[in-house]
Image (cartoon, rainbow, N blue to C red; front, side, top):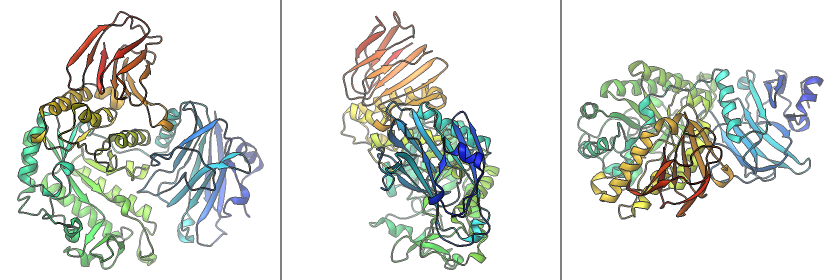
Length: 595
């Protein structure tokens, strides 16, 4: 099997990034090996003499050291280490899905091996684990469906970092490496980092223009400057939700519910609020007036009866259609941005067409990336402060280049899921704004139960989706206290040094630090060691325990004053720090503040 590199490279490859010659496809050529201070890169191209189609594997082996757990951007609760022959640590990526990185960690949360493939448009399958025969870490990358016409110009970089440093620093250094290669994320206006109102859980498809304006008046009182108008503005109310999708692709207001979309935007702007509009991007319904334009050029049917299908952006005129209709809506309705849903549904299947000669981008990943670049460029000419929200699954660098708000995937009432996935997103898209899934809760819940929704997302932007007119007084106090606390500390929480500890335990302690100010959240641990150079400190007790312990370490806090607040913002205790290690009685979701 052909394997092209030189002997000097092979000696270095053995140390950090050992390419398995007998398991790697002969179409791959490896060159330009670089190694510096524990970080190795190697360029990957293809052998032009090898002309055949099908999946192509490359296999790497690395030292496992004290490996204990694994991490990847979309792997959620799967953090345990398994053999490489199992599929437990396996995931697919493309331009509009996932991010081809994986990491192996030790018990202390330090990096053992951070692996990435710099290829953000191909459809890839990554699988990692321990190879039993060699007792080494193993990573297999499969480039899917490699047709000669596409594979001729293939180019990628394998990146491996085996430095023994905090895992989050290894991730951050890779993000800096991508910046050096020109993978620059879209700019984020200040409004992208601030509390936002969403209509979805609060009003769902029962929404009307009047109902939305009523809730926005309340939202503005809680300091929200942006509203996301979600699904339901374009359809009547149906008992079966997908019936309303039959006109998908028209994206015009259902006039009995929304008689004047531009008037709505103008009213909100006069209130000092921005309007982001939901679009089910990929869907074309059978009753859409544009259905015939697509002329059967669909990727697949969303429903078996074919009432809704997924458009195919590999054709130039279809991409142009998307750019034109989004640009038209932004201009016509004076919008501030879009929530573009289902971009991860641009995916080829057995139903997809294969007339590649009629496609200027036969690779679906490239086609989506090009289309979103064109969309973003057109919309930013209208509004340089454009807000584009993408959902959690489409988060790779090709998507970061165009979207600037990345939201945790749907998890109604799921405060733990919101926290874990929000932190994963913060690590994955550090130069973009990370938003929570919309917050909802039972209006009969306790004040502490309401506060669970807010305390778990200190480090991501809260999207609120409740009926303010139905909130009991205690919930109103919780909401105001937490939103004000987050806003007062927004610069630290969003732009400070971000330290989420113990990813294998789903981040029991998280803190951010900037300019001497430290904000910490305790989730399943009730112990916090204050980092060096802390001058002021706030600790949120979301651990479920009534007593927490603070070790001030080398920081000079003895003799300093503190105040303890309950979750409604009421001071319940105060005092003076008496020693370096102290315990404090703090109710669930209460906060201790030391200045």
